[in-house]
Amino acid sequence: MLGRYTFFNAQSGATVDRNGIGVSDMRSRERLDKNKLLLYGIIGSCNLGDVEYGKAVAQAIQGGITCLQVREKDVTQAELLAIIRKVKPLCDAAGVPLIVNDDALVCKLSGAAGVHIGLGDGSIRAAGKLLGSDKIIGATAHNLDEALAAQAAGADYIGVGAAFGSKSKGNAVRLANLKAYRDITSAVDIPVIAIGGINAGNVGELAGLGLSGIAVISAIFGSRDIAASAHELRAAAQALTSSPCAEDNSEEGTETDG
Image 1 (cartoon, rainbow, N blue to C red):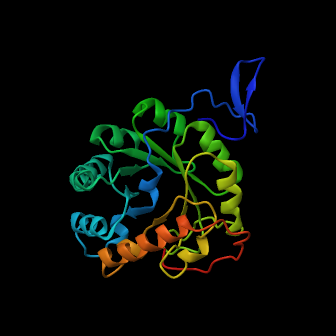
Image 2: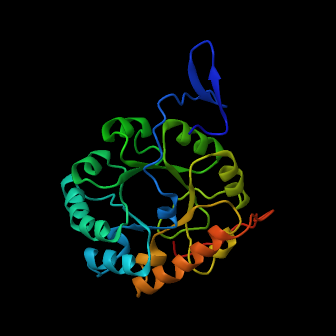
């Protein structure tokens, strides 16, 4: 399915979006059930404290996460592969897609469900060529132009933020306002999830913006009770994705735990 802003160039025979970005190599998106993006947990060693990795994943699954991304920035490729292989059976048993942050090769070698490509961290198209058509490819965007470019390159979903100030990613680029989510979800045909400083206290501010879910880091994995926190956020995510579209949720957020 092509995006709303796509056109056919009769001269070149290529399909392009409204910015002229070619989309002729867009991949089939039938592999992604957008309901799996409802509560997208992101785990990293830096957020766990003394909680064992597998135990943290099991508790998050028990609490209701619908997708899990492993995000490790300071490990070797071999170490990352070992982590993915350790938690994959837990995710598979629960029907929770396992996403590898940035490393398409580890995704391929481990049999994970997909890869998430951050801005400046790799090529969506290259990941698609390596992984083929049966893997999920996620992308990051901070604004409408980046979201449209990610869709054109073949992303299956987009993580957009930061919604609020985040201690997990202190250098995260903030959205101008929350209404920017509505602008993006109205313009693209792939699911959009919010990320950045989201917790049980502010998630309600994201209602009515066309989001398919929320991505959460420390509000789940930095919690003293991972399962309970995930359970609370799962209910909040269901409420916000089922709410009618709001006319204007434009208030800027404040810094939160991430």
